[in-house]
Length: 260
Image 1 (cartoon, rainbow, N blue to C red):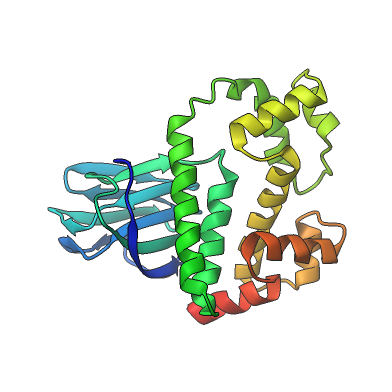
Image 2: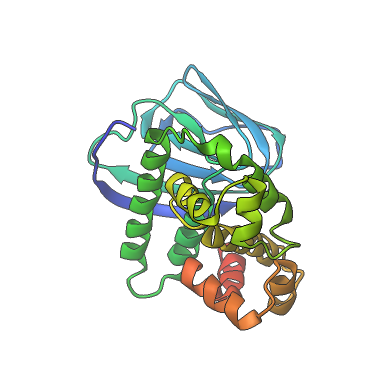
């Protein structure tokens, strides 16, 4: 990103599903009326933008600058889902398109889902809430690009344990610290330095991201989803979901259906 800029307008925020573009290759023309910031939750594509070839995979963010382009084609190897934010700024965010991997920053996926649910709610104040969330997304992206995370490897065993077991095991701070051969206080301090949140909040956000995916499938009740996401208390699940996403699980499912 180039540096400081002011977001002058959010034009729209959409969720693109796996069936939106049935063709394997789609051409999007030669002019973008708005900047686009896209979070890819699933799927695998190659994007041809100007002279660049960008690979998008799960948990990557793609930025496309407003203006004329020689080429904008998307070749889908595996269809997936993404959230696309269309917006304008007072100066360029970046002169070039780019893709950034954010596999370790669970907060970004949560923020994209939250801004989408806020935008489609059209409740009083939704526009300014969405604007605030977009600034938070850019703050996370900037922090990710500037933080070298020199100590990431030290907590790799805990990260592997979390991502393999968060739906099946109630992971304690002691279990995670032990996996890294550290004391609990040092592990928690190091984890927060790298990820910006505590291990407990990180795990909750992983569960809530998975809950959003299950809600979009429209196959399960809220109670079933709470159980599938390893929440023992449905009231706690609903409170946490509302705190992170800004809406209840039921409201999120309804807003997703209305946006399709």
